[in-house]
Amino acid sequence: MATAAHAESPRETVAHAVVLTDNADEQRRLVSGLAGNSDPDIPRLLNLWKESGFFIATAPAGGWQGLAEGAKVAVTLGDDKDADDKQAASVLATGAPLRDPAGQPVRLVATDLDNADTDFDLRLAMKTVLDLAAVTAADPVQRRQVVEQIGLAQDPAKLPVLRERVKVETDAHVQQALRVAIALLELRSEDAATQIAATNTLGAVRALSARDALTTLARETETTRPQVARAAQAAGKAIETHLQVVNFFGTLFRGLSLASVLLVVAIGLAITFGLMGIINMAHGELIAIGAYTTYLVQNLFGNGMALSPFGWSFRLPGLNAGGWFYESYFLFALPLSFLSAALAGVLLERCVIRFLYRRPLESLLATWGVSLVLQQLLRSVFGANNVQVYSPSWLSGHWTVFDVLLGWNRVFVIAFAVAIIAGTWALLTKTPFGLLIRAVTQNRAMAACMGVRTERVNVLTFAFGSGLAGLAGAFLAQIGNVGPSLGQNYIVDSFMTVVVGGVGNLFGTVISALGIGVTDQGLQQILGNPVLGKILVLCAIILFLQWKPAGLFVTRSRNLEG
Image (cartoon, rainbow, N blue to C red; front, side, top):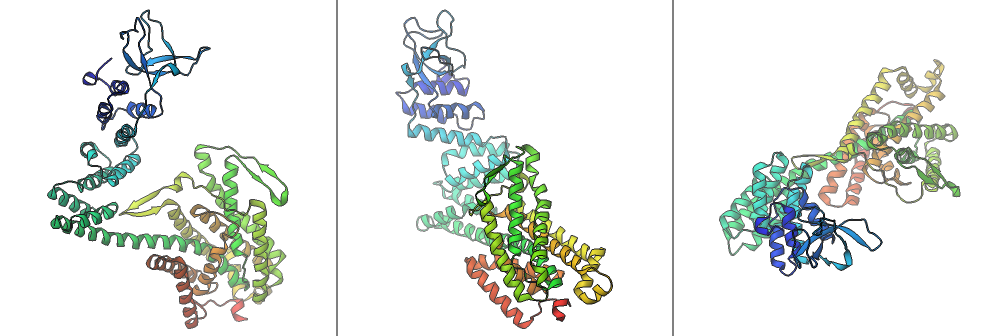
């Protein structure tokens, strides 16, 4: 068997280390020597060793091929046990079967062999090798994650490998991560010049991950190396300034995504309230119906799901889809969410709301009762606990722009909200149906005299507004969990959006949603308290309505004339 000095492969090095049970220091040295080696066999061998997959066999009288009597060899055993519990043995160093002097394969009993055990220090050395092996992984995202973890650990022993890797790394993001990780490790240097150079590097690239390390360095060197402390403080201030910019744009982005959801919810309210004068407190449950429809479609594309409405249990079969077909479930869920909420809206309008036109207080109380009924219905069908809707892979990632994380799901919500606004505007201004809606909004009696079937307009308009609420529910399913009371978290904000923008005014609703969404997220970031932020937003809206009771933009409609 090859010795460490003549090892031609990592396999031989590992095999030699395995049999050195009486020399733990030499074992760790051999394993540590594999650090930085890009051989893909290394992770498999070390993981198998940690899982007790190696054994130490001693050659019997007469020996084995290439091994004298009493020689020790590292072996692995196959899975094929015979009646005597013997398994085929392979030499770890070569991967070839272990053979007797006659050339016949040797079979051994595991309990007759010595286990190749590992202690804490050896496992620590293995972890270091495995971490550094991942630096050469084919996936740049994995390489970057590993490099960042190494940098945060600040183990100077890993510096040589990182320095060698940065010379050959081709991915720009991984190169940046390598430079940051090297600088973080150099902060632990005993040389003041090296530490100052590292702090300058971290400050120049605005490395957010270095904040704590720089703070610790400045504290530790304040009296012993004041020049290092000053450099660390300067780098820390540069990073703090950068962090404020990142938080500002991150808050703006989250505010836009919240505004987009509010906007899609509020458009339906703006249309139905402006046309019918109905305060629909069940609008939030229409959001929940859209979200649960998305959950249902996800399960139908998968393995199906079990339901137990009112004690009657049954199972919906699934398509057991996979790959791109399963990933496309959300594209099917969007129109189905719209249709399911629109159908619920038609039933609500025909069964309740059509009897309450021009009676806003009664409509508020009636739809509030309907909302309670719908919540209980959703609990009975889907259960009281929240359910999870998993985002498809094309909505699960994010872009990082100057350290600002732009989640793909939120970008999608913003883009789709813009499309919905454009579509709603085109519907209201460029189609015959939109003309009918505007006619009924401006003068219902005159529109009826001109032959407009106002009841049909009411039904279709309410269905459209309810469908938009269903779409909002589908969006929310991609951002958080889905529960029976999901819509209640947004219904108040949505009504405020409609009132502040001007009842029935599409442009005012857009402006109001943007203002409320961005302000809400901004105050939460500044105050660090979501509840207090919402309270301040509500107080600001109340004061604004004292000044302009009709909202930003006044629209003449049937309920205002009344």
